[in-house]
Image (cartoon, rainbow, N blue to C red; front, side):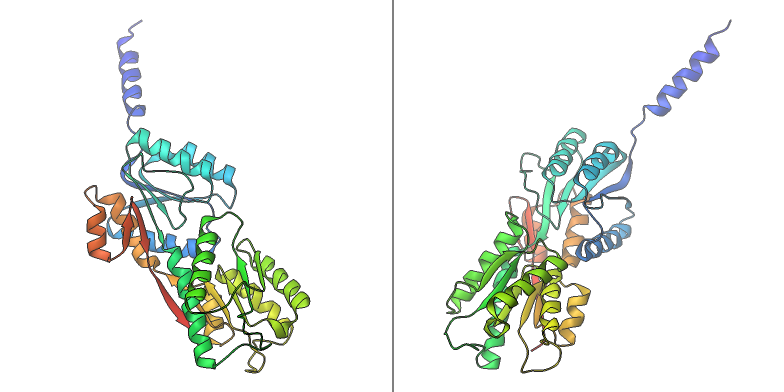
Length: 327
């Protein structure tokens, strides 16, 4: 039997299937979930700017399941030459760092800062909102609202009686947003502490329940403002206020509510004068910089500072917020 033809076929088969399994223009996008509006908006902008550079994307939605995301990264990482990750899961973040190191490919954590160190890998970056700025801007907006209205001290106790609704416990973004909010209010001369300071886990329904409880506990006449770490929670608090006849068009029955994020429903509520304001991250710049970091191997911190006028330190790029208000 002549084994030469068989040997040639075997060698050809081996060569074909030993080729690299990714294309040079492909990028993996690993998202913990595409359901949050802010992640969906970020993804759309990343795709828009990426396609201008002929990048093909492979999108992975873990549907809020950390185990799903770990498995997606483990199984599909090899099929691309760069990676974008949005996650609040430390195992997923660490896996992405480890595999990026192994494959020597660019890695950008977008929107949500990973709670693991990526500085040992020089091709890894974080691009996200300046959360400290968000809280200070909320404080400035509330101060401006009070200055415009004259006074909101309904119970005449000379204290700013506000309900604060945080994100999730121990979450760095929730801590930073709330700490800067409090610092900003103190800088403006307001006496704290707050009426209540609870965790709504970034969720509309949880914020609604928190607000219902606080209204019953404190009395709606003693609540002078509501400040939430996100628009979703601001909207949940709004619904609870509306259940009691507030924030529905009667200027005598209105409590200012502030959020963070630029949620479409929150923007609508602001336009309708049901919510007083929110602060919106510059997702456009975030997406542009993310794409530049996976395509330009010579991009430096100084170049990003010079081009975008942003705070950049230790490969952390922090984009700004803008105000949306109506009062």
